[in-house]
Amino acid sequence: EIVMTQSPATLSVSPGERATLSCRASQSVSSNLAWYQQKPGQAPRLLIYGASTRATGIPARFSGSGSGTEFTLTISSLQSEDFAVYYCQQYNNWPCFGQGTKLEIK
Amino acid sequence: QVQLQESGPGLVKPSQTLSLTCTVSGGSISSGDYYWSWIRQPPGKGLEWIGYIYYSGSTYYNPSLKSRVTISVDTSKNQFSLKLSSVTAADTAVYYCARVLRQWLSPDYWGQGTLVTVSS
Image (cartoon, rainbow over all chains, first blue to last red; front, side, top):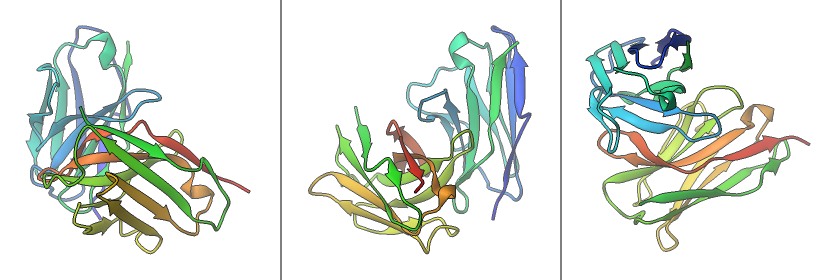
């Protein structure tokens, strides 16, 4: 079973600044990784798949990188609507999610 | 614009079977480009993928839930369904249905979710 670990658990960043979220896999998942954004009371929203490909309609300020066991989601200039919980998900084996990073306003 | 809508009881007694249906609109469930999945989220916790199905009926289940899960599809109604047997309080969660990009195994359209509480 692959375990996905996200860090930090909570990230405090000011609007307009850059946010960097990390996701680590317990074993290599190649580039089989996706990122999601979830706001309270809403379903998750697909941001990135294939580690670095933005999903349809996702703004260019969201970017993903990494391969193997280390992955990063970067939000280049935080907007008010970006404060939410972010999950990574691997699909190299049975798909599973990380525990999430809460991005909050500093 | 694809839309998914979960339906089913919001309260299930322990040891009984949880049954939910997802109705897909704005697109055909028979599209070969997608899987159709169930994912759940206990209150205040993270996401767990329960399983997914292809329109042909091929199913894929979470190994930790496999003995209790059945997912089926009805292409004539553009629906797919979840049955989870022998439920306990640990199965209390918001249950989401979602369309999954087949090549990338990433859900790109989700239902709004439905809270199912297991309690006597």
